[in-house]
Length: 617
Picture 1 (cartoon, rainbow, N blue to C red):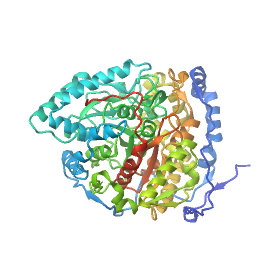
Picture 2 (picture 1 turned 90 degrees about the horizontal axis):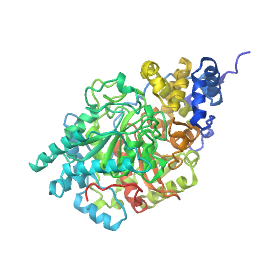
Picture 3 (picture 1 turned 90 degrees about the vertical axis):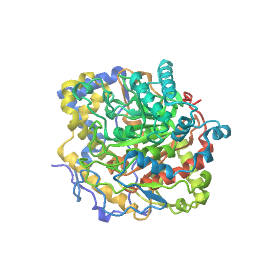
Picture 4 (picture 1 turned 180 degrees about the vertical axis):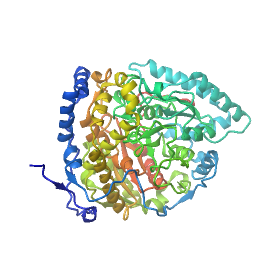
């Protein structure tokens, strides 16, 4: 007899209302944590012809992949990449960018949205609060006033990175940084400032780049020891070209989880990225180096790539802001092609203000970008209407409607849940923001569909080079991933894309009555860097899926814009982040509300990191 036929109800019969009959299913990963010798033995078995087949079939069966994507009938067609309804984006309190202007012109428009710098003087704020990061405008003001030069900042940066590497343990923020190139850029910027002709507010400001993004003359390793042997860097990525046009001081390639396929940031080749708030904790993956560099004060902002929460997750764990735009909003040209339909260049910054400036600088698609829905002109939130940073008079914030799926929201550690509810309560008390209770069906199925998709795409994209050059030079955790990724069938991949269609329907239904969805960014704070995982990597799908990734999948699988904002700390002093997921192309709304949350929660976010540097004083 054949297996019993399973069938999903058509999406037209499903409800996203609070009274939906859909049951919430928590992430239920069935795979043991492995590291060290045990992981090496399991890797050998997964890669063997006989044992590997047995283990792969069992893993897929135990984790519902076989049931949901092999044995279940769908009524919907596949959606092969995020595709959004063609409609006008209506956002209040914004200005619209002209698409044919230069990056410096765009950045100048972003500055028009901000309150005057003297009204939020950084030194004055530091006298009132124990700790604040310097912002991009603080750097620019220091350069213009002549108090310091980009060259001196560059020298201090190099000294700070050297210090971070000499600590015990090594913080491992960077994979590569070129002293000669950094000082050359800084010298040119210093000369422009001396003539009174900086290219933009970013001129001379240190910006770090995840080692998944081409930034000539650096190699792009993707956190591996072999990628640079098969893929040469001949030019800058599109986002890097835009930052160079603004005069940004590009200070090197940050560390990352190997090939972006992990949540901890433990890299057996370049070291585990340590969390500046606790050196024994992980910074998160896969853009952990960028998040940690910002948190440690080495730069006010950095670039990452987000294919499965890889910007927002480490942002939350390291206490900084993390933004990924709508799929297609920022060109992926020149980014390592690890996942075509899931990944987006994202921003990690010490403040929402700096996130806005960076977003404005790098946004924009290219004609050759492989996207189904081309972005409309970007809107920027007008924050200067908040008089002297006082958001209490803003009607824009009070008009925003927030959706919350409480069963999902509450599926987090007590300290995270309590901190997130505190932020929501303050937001409601200050503005009377309306929070709508909703249901999001099939969240666990969406997580699995994302896993199948990201595994299939990276396997198809770099699998040949991996088999030829990379397999024996890769960490054991990555080798297990690739052994499993290669087992996904056509039916499983197509069923995953049909699940994408279903999830897009559910989320668009929610956005008919709400402007955004709120969740914790992660269900737990930063995990400990386990000593047994440092040499060969660590396999911990249970913690990664259930604790670190569970709230972030929709941003990638559906291409929705999302932002993580720091809102406080747990009982161990580790940062907690709140996530906002927006309608397609609604980055301005996210930044508006994130700015309000940032200001409201500022008194709760003044704990200095354990490892931090000051490049201006």
